[in-house]
Image 1 (cartoon, rainbow, N blue to C red):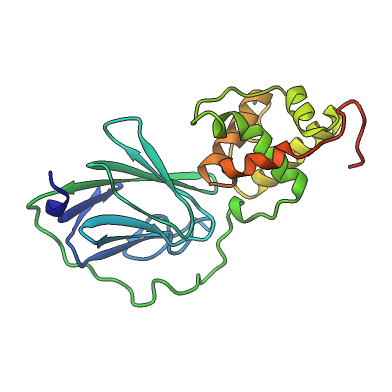
Image 2 (image 1 turned 120 degrees about the vertical axis):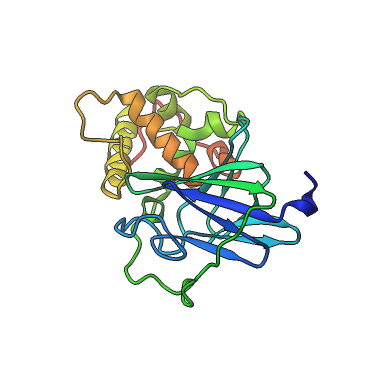
Length: 248
């Protein structure tokens, strides 16, 4: 199908389907044209918008902290749309997903021909400020140690095109130049901090393995775009001998 022929976009969520034509826009979030979950305070009022620009369909991330993931329904390809960024819908069928607190959501987007469209009705003030503050784990302030811990945890994935192996706590502590006691304390506190902000799978279950908790923290960090490959250079700055305790 030639790019110039891609004139209609089908968007489906929770069994409801609508068709967009060039010139239409569709906003989605806690409110907007497509209401994802009006009762989730962790979800932006306006998280994203679909629009037809320069002959192609795009999705723009209009939120401030939640990342949007785009998966090709027919392959393992995917992309991440960071807050404030936009991306073309490059796949014929795209699974668009995101997290808000403990909830995950997915929309199905398909580029088709010759489907009847429906008339959109859009609130005029959709891009205005939230009526209530949106609470997200990605808006939490992080100090230098907390950010370094997340970078070290995610390093194998950032440095290997998404294919990595989780290091042990001792290996991570050595990488950071920390004592194992300091690393464990920092990790416990960070998991508790994210859990209180709505990230599931970090605390609160007796059978939760330490490895599972760290993998869940890696998953959330990468999905939300909290760190990226450029941050790896921070780990290469000189660090003291791991055998010499550093002041916390």
